Length: 302
Image 1 (tube, rainbow, N blue to C red):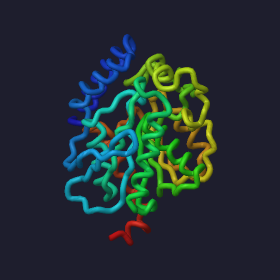
Image 2: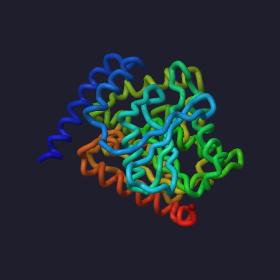
Image 3: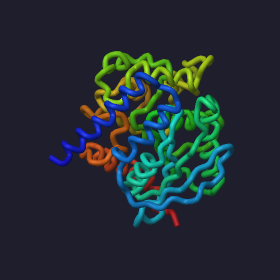
C-alpha cells in the first residue's frame, strides 16, 4: 500500500512536470522544475560529501556512503539533458549505488548547455577520468556510471579513452541512457504520451541546446552510431514506457555481452526515486555487477 501511494505521488509529480515542460522546455524552466521535483522523488541516503576539487574547467566531489569502507570507485556522470543538475537527486543515487557495491563515488559537475554546448561536457568528463588515473587509482577498481545524458557522456568518455590508448574502467553502468541525439528510435513516437516524464517535442529541444549546427550522428554526440568494440563490460537499465527505450535496446544489440534489462512501467532513471521496490532491486543488481567486475582489483587494494 505504501509503495503504491509513493508510486502514485511520483507519477503525479512527473506528469505535472511533463505538462509544464511541454509548454516551455527552456533551460531555466528545466532547471527550476528539476530543483522543485527533487524533494518529492529523491532517495534518502546517509553519506558524506567532500569539498569540490578542480578537474580541468569543471569540478567534482567525492561521495562516501556512511559505514562503507574504501573499496572501488564510481566515476559518475549525472543526467539532466546536458542542461540541468540536481545534487539533491544525484548525490543520494550515487551514495545508494556506492553502498550496494562497497565503493565511493566521484561526481562530475560538468559545464552545462546552452551556456556551454558540446564539447564542453565531454572535455570535463574526460578531465575527470584523467584526474582519477593521475591520482594513482587502479583503473580496475573504477567503474563509470551515468543516467540519461550522463549515460551518453560515460560512453563517449570510454570511447575517447580507447581511441587515445588510455586505460578503460572495469565496467560501465547506464541507466535510461540518451545515446542517439537524432532521436531516431521508434519508441520516441510509440511511447510519446505514455512516458510519464517527457514528451517527444520536449526531448528534441536538447538538440538545439547541446548540439545546434552539428552533425547529430557524430559518435561524440550520439555514441549509438560509433564504434563500440574495445569497451568494458556494460550493464543497461531502462523502463518499458520510456521515450528512450529504443536507445538502450539498439545500443545493447551492438555491444557484445551487454547485460540489459527492461523494467515494466518504470519511469526515466527510476533507480534515483525513493519508495520504488523495482528501484531498490535495480540498485542491488547494479551493486552486484560492480562487485563482480572489480573484485579482483579491490581484493588487493590497501
